[in-house]
Image 1 (cartoon, rainbow, N blue to C red):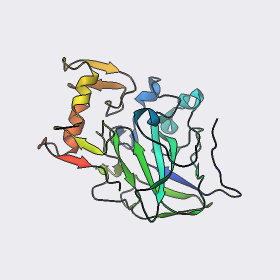
Image 2: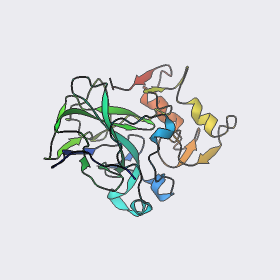
Image 3: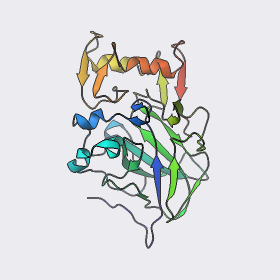
Length: 254
């Protein structure tokens, strides 16, 4: 139903590794969304306002992929972006993907090698998630048929901006709490990320919960919670510093 690549001959390709901070625990990520059967078969990003760029790529997964267990289990959808080396704010190609429990990013047909529909060349590579802050390589990457590996989980991998990733244990992760998918993590004020959690559970009874595939589920356990153990609100406050609620964190993407 889609065109996976438009290159001729040997297509340029690369691999990406990334951890989502909200789901990360002890060296891997939780896969509650998959276990509960909540991950959609189709790329969810257009429905939350993301406009894809470039050539259309595979955007649907088969249900069999979500029966995979263990470290190779897909835990959620992400978007991989190929951006201009000269103007890194320009997204030339976006590719819907899934991220596995072990941080490996795969195409919707479960291929850990992302075949680029663009020509061989140098690009900034970014990864984005529906309720985390995106990150991007600090310098352009030469994409060719040799299969470059971009490991965002490794703190030695150069990334764009300042404090672009959160560090948990020995790994670097995407900052969690960008509930509004607007490039900011805010606890108070206009367009904050805390209030949508309360609205999602009903708006008045703070102890309510709701199960489903929602952006307000910051820790990706399949349950939106405003109070109590493993709630989604506290993560936002913690990630902006933990003590000054007016602090905020901005996505380090140009």
